Image (cartoon, rainbow, N blue to C red; front, side):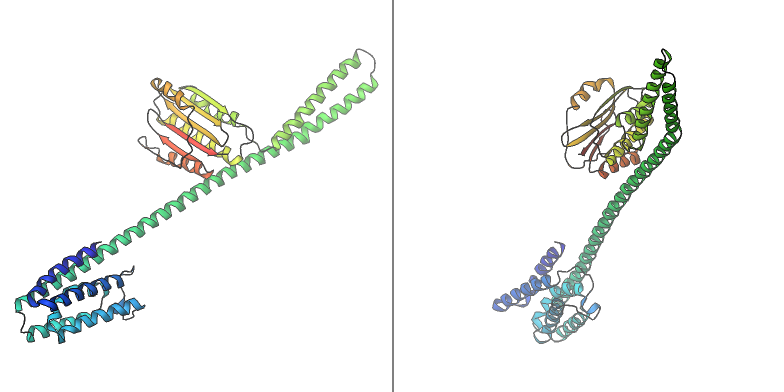
Length: 393
C-alpha cells in the first residue's frame, strides 16, 4: 500500500511539469504513457526478493528482463524527445527498487543532454524534475526498507511461534516420558513385591495347607478334627487373599479415588476440603497420569499461594468427556461454586493465565498436561485459583 501511495504522489508532482512542458494531444499521450508504464512496472516488480536485476547482473525471469527493458527505453527516450524527461521521476522510483544501474546511468545522461540542448523548457523546470526524481528515489528506498523490515518481523514472529510450538511439543513429550518412567518404576516395584509374596508367603501357606491336610487325615476324632478344619479354612482364605493381592499387584491399574484422596490430605489441616470423584474404572492410563499431575500441581499452588478457606476438587465423568475442577475460594463464593458444578465446557483451548502470584511455570505445566491427552484448559484467578479441565473420553 505504501508503494501505491508513493507512486500516486510522484505522479501528481510529475503532472505539474507535464502541464508546463506539453499541451494538447502531446500532454494526453504522455499522461497515459506514464500511467501505463508506472502500472506495468508496479506489476512486474511485485516480488518477495529485495535484490535482483542488474544488482546481481543476472535477471532470473521474464518479468525481470521486461522491467529492465522498459525502464531502459524510458530513460533513452529523452535523448530523442526531450519532453519525455518528465517520465524521469516515475521511472526513477522503479529504478531505485529494481537496482537497474544501467537505466539509472542512461537517465543521468539524458538529463544532462536535455539540460544542454532543450529550448522548450527552462532550467527551473529541469531542476524541478531533478528534485522530484530525488524525492522519488528517497521514497522508493524508504518504502523498500520498510517492506524488508516488515517481512523480517513476520519471519521472526513465525520463527518464534514455530519454536514455541516445538518447545510445547517437547515439554509434552517430557511429561509423557516422565509419567512413563514413573509407571514403569511402579510396575517394577509391584512385580518385585508380587514375586516376594508368591515365593515366600505363598509357598509357606501352601506347605501349611498340606500339613493341615495331613493332620486332618490323622486326627479324625472330635473336637480336634473340627478345630483343625477351622484352621484349614482360615489358611485357605488367607491363600486366596494372597493370590488376589498378587494379581492386583501385577495389574497396572491406578486407583484414582485413593490416589487423589492421598494427594489432597495436606489440604485437610488448613482448608475445608470437598472431594467429589465420580468416574468408572475404564479411564486410560495416560489420562490418569495427566489428571494426577494436574491435581498435584494445583494443590501445590494452593498451599503456597492461597489465603482462602475452601477447596473443591471434583472429577466427574460425562458421556463424552472427563471434567476436572479444582477451586479454592472464600465463604462468599460458595453459592457461586455450587452453580458452577453443573456447567460443562467443550470449546477450544482457552488458557487465561493471570500470573499475579508468580506461578507461571506451574500453570504452563497444567496446560501442557491437559493438551497432552487432547484436553482443554481454562485457568482463572477470579475469587481464588480455579482450574477447569475437560478431557475427551
